[in-house]
Image (cartoon, rainbow, N blue to C red; front, side, top):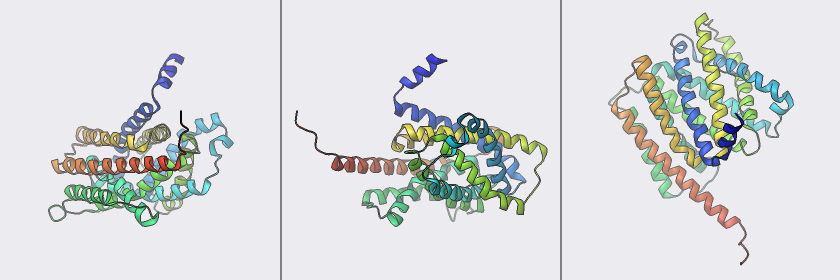
Length: 308
């Protein structure tokens, strides 16, 4: 075992980050499968509460091993709380969409995340977004329209919820990337689960539907996959630049499309994959331009190296 750990640690940090994020994509695809079944008869609020309640239960051994103080200690509590609140809203919308759309469609529309991050950076952070990045945003929007095809297919509630939840999840992921600079992956995921459970509990009580006994088995499996998925994702964020991790997200479309077809006979049409490819290309270019911008900032900020 120690030899395996040594070989793992000997790999480049970027490669380890990519592998962690690839693993998280598989785990999140399984999470989609396990929550799709009870979502057919439970409302989204109860779904969000139970999903993170069982996820928190799987974190208890980690908390006991690390100790309560070490697990929860952070100097950025307001940011953890804000992230948990907005993630709760996004999760509830996502659970509304889950039984109404195919897994491939949900994943493909989720690729619009970097587009919303770019728009938010320009509108709320005052970031200087140049013409090429705006053109990439427009191309990404066209990709989303290829999937939705307004006027040619019904713009149903599920698609609307995904389009609304995606910028919320994008903001949450951006905050988690910022938190990863100072807090451990364990602390970030533990706070996320705790805040979501607390935020969702009052709504779940108000709209309560008693789950069937076998629903609990699905939530146990979903809680395990979701918790491991978030831990894997956070470790990837801490090891590799987000620009390198962006292409790995495209693998999620493959896993979700395959699982949706094999287990639920969901048949996404060719336009879902065409639109996803367009969105992916746009998101990849946006990430590339962001990496170039940061490199220029680091070059300007770093002092000139002394002459040899």
